[in-house]
Image (cartoon, rainbow, N blue to C red; front, side, top):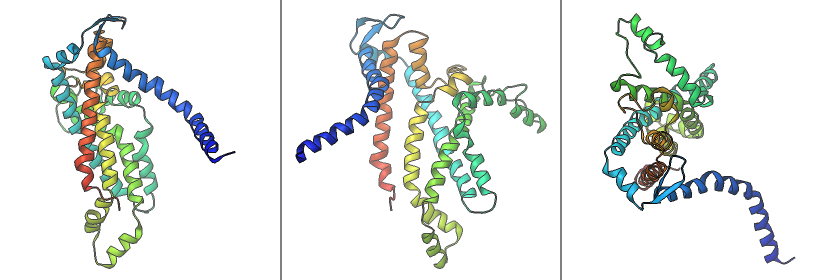
Length: 295
């Protein structure tokens, strides 16, 4: 067998192994994306069947009304509530539990637990905690003499409440990623710093933080994308209310498609959201990556 034929055989074998993944990606990612692009240029009837070609009219309607910009503003605020707070909270937990003291493995297991809880289950738990009359949060507030808070029915508190639940839900993943990053730092670096007379605070800010920058970079990208795709907790806790105070972009897409049956407009919104997420990711790679230390 010639070298050329052997190479083609290896390539063919590789594609045979990749075929199941290619089929899954085609069915669940590429086809829906192509279909969304197609629907965004059309009007559809309540059954989702294309009724009329309208060109860019769906996109123009999105930017003509203020509803999309309001949803985008809510989404941006939700991102600001959840992403920095979640990363900082996970960093604090890692800083307190990454040492080898007795019993730290138990705390590491506890802090990692939210990663195994589904969005639906977590939302159901927090729905009980947020209950205005029988919820545990208002119960403890009552013991402190604080008036009950209408967490999910007050527009001033609703987005904060959903953000609080989201921070807890994402803390397990962030904690595990940061814990893995900090355990990947060579102990020899800390030993050298101790010999030079560095204290714990200086080692944390001058050694640990710079060497964790690739982990922070990864977490920020994943967390921002996740915040723009939030849906489950909002659908269960508030359904976009009250007064659209938690109506993020993804939930407005859901309402447009499966409540108003405007699949063309919903597809246009989804494509605009895709472009926004892609631009944010490119900006992060363009500017934030410069401050990342890979060595």
